[in-house]
Image 1 (cartoon, rainbow, N blue to C red):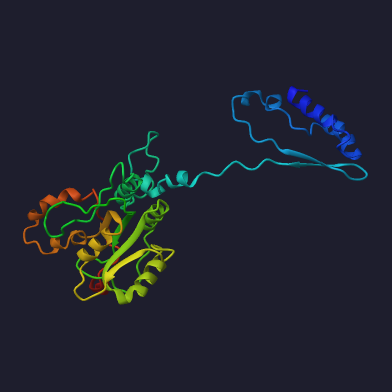
Image 2: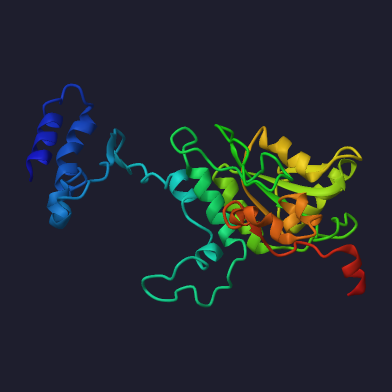
Length: 301
């Protein structure tokens, strides 16, 4: 018997008056049967340097004809923290990162076309806006051909995904195809407290239909993402992006054409004139696959 067990047993035996007869009589039997908690060193010498789990509680309940001994197990180990869970990257995204030290572990996995978009957004979202200011993906002066971005200050992070196909507009009468790659990336960003917004030239009066499309496609499974739609005839996407930049730090924008980042691209006669903006691609601006086909293209198919 170790010092721990001897001390505990002596303390119990010293209190015969405080315990009922049945309880006091049961103590020697309990000690002999090994129900009292042993020291960890009695059973597992190799774990002497490990942190011992909480001891179970032994309760002795008086009763006839014999006392009942109830062992209450210790509480389970704490679950992983939310922060640890959020640090895990989506499997499809991990497949697109640098090769594993053990070889091509993800060789059989398809490359996620939204990997760069996700990695940049997650990296910016993790920054402390005071110690390391986040970089906005919204131009401070659209149309100026100057890569000067809006100020983020301490605004909450967000990402923006353009729904309109290149040269067209979202067809609210058709379904948005399921896109597991994008859905997985956005779900992971939401867990990291990054807000998700969707942009389209669709009139705001059709917001309900757009939300139904996103919900049915699995891209916005909770129907809580923000929508940047056109509220007035003179509304422009550039103006809506600037408005969003006043309430959120838009750290990444995904679109299938350059006009999804600055409408000036749609009117340039000489594309080389926009060379100063090229550095923004991959650093906040991400050209990604078309989410939906243009209405005319769908009819031709």
